[in-house]
Amino acid sequence: MTRIERAKALATELPRIYPLAHCELDFSTPLELLVATILSAQCTDVRVNMVTPALFARCRTAADYAAIPQEELETIIHSTGFYRNKAKSIRAMGAVLVEKHCGEVPRTMEELSALPGVGRKTANVVLGNAFHINEGVVVDTHVGRLSLRLGLTTQTNPVNVEHDLIKLFPREQWCELSHWLIWHGRRRCKARNPDCQGCELRSLCPRKGLTS
Image (cartoon, rainbow, N blue to C red; front, side, top):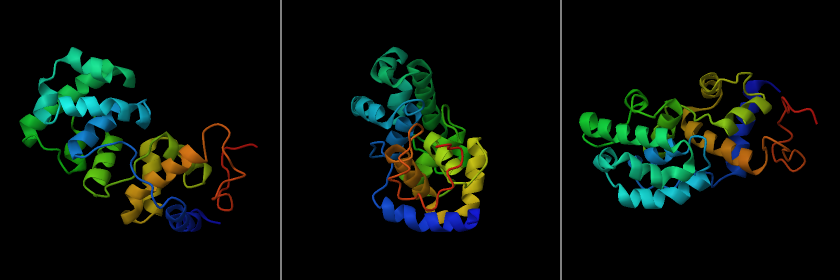
């Protein structure tokens, strides 16, 4: 099976296996998703979702994030790890949104990725899930790992993995593709001891990088 053939089969099988796949960060506005995604760096979605209710109640606008004292924000987000840098980024992000975007989250990759604490992955999360704009594919550790194991790429750099994926899958599936692969990575194809025996994709998987 060629890489293109495998991608075509996965584009059919993944939505069948995970019809309810979605972003597992809790949010109700683009700003909340932006903040939650910044907090999710080196942290689980479960932990972020434990922290954000209090944070979102305290800060409802970009101006609120720009104005909240560093120490107070650090205390709220402490359990997400790297809290000092995250707090600095979130406060600076709020200030830039107020200064350059009238307090609103922008809808372009260029503008989003220019915000403090925001890279291409975070921008893709916000564009795809808050605005339903398929600008690219979110490549986190799960997507990167599964893309290698499934033989969809030979790359390890997230940008290069994304480049390979967008060539293989239709644009309208780019946002969902990351959710399907993340759900499969969390539920079946884990980094250690993947459940190959019970895997719904075993007939399509060349098991790249797996020795057992």
